[in-house]
Image 1 (cartoon, rainbow, N blue to C red):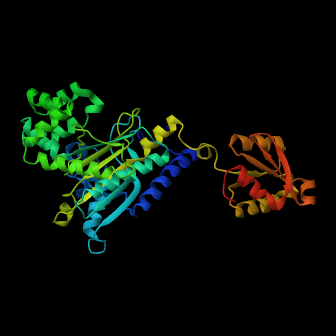
Image 2: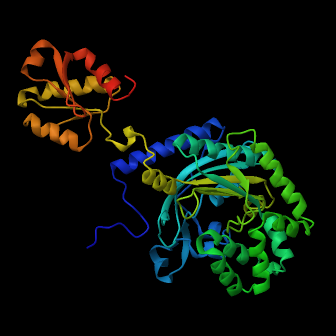
Image 3: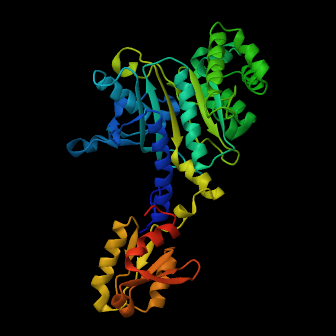
Length: 437
């Protein structure tokens, strides 16, 4: 029997969890500074809540849950695992419309599931870190979200990222100018969204395979390689000009935020999800095939549940991809990369076990993370065990120390050992471990 987890999922060992909690902690603190409030929704939804919200490609990737009990034999599904955090949010807004503020800003950090093909940085179970603003059409919403995700990334240590910005209406105008039939717009955008992954020839082949003529496919791809050509193409549409003006307003507003220097207009950005209606955004870094996150405006999605449209815009950071890049680049602080314990209390002999536990309690009250070796053993073995767990300090209370009210503290990183009054130990270790006592 294999002990591996299902393909596209992972077990998280202690070091993995510490890295994840570090990133999530930064995300949460930044989002809350921007006024976003926490929200959580169930892991699964009624299947009709999800089906039809993500386009044809998305529908294929939804994990469906078969009916249970006497209905199991039917093979039908009535529930599905959450595909993203945006559609559940739209349902929540419709359900609790009278309890939420006029301008509702929420953040949500929870796992989602997609029946996708696993690859580097792409999993079937993964966490999303979302922010969404409900109730306003102002471009200040996009500018503030761009600022928030920029602060998250710069706080984590990223410097070389770009936030690409485009507009769904500009893409529609371009497709119309290239003579792509309206009925094929959705499928064309799904193909165009893969440009960075499969290249120009791959997208051309997929466009033609979806029914777009070779001439129209070439017109689209040519426009993506030349920004002025793209702009001339969309200006032929009545909707193109206003949409480009909206992009320019967002860029202008972003100049006064931390996002300045990171945001740029990129005509080829498509994003394949069908619910986007306005500005779309995506974060890229040089050494990752794919993005660290993305989002956009979806003013019609809440209306699918509520019966009237509600302005909405959101941005989602991909926790897994952020961690992959940070790990490969060695971006985590030493305190995260090391162990989760500041000091281990050794056990001198069986008679000292109670005193070892008492000392551990004193050090914990001093704000330290403390482990106790579970049995009396040779000190060399206890030091070796602590070292294997990347514990920086060990506390030793032998017969002499107990008699004198002192503790010997050994720094396993340098090998230095110092004996001090018992009451000074917590502050000494806190200073050496760079922790607040």
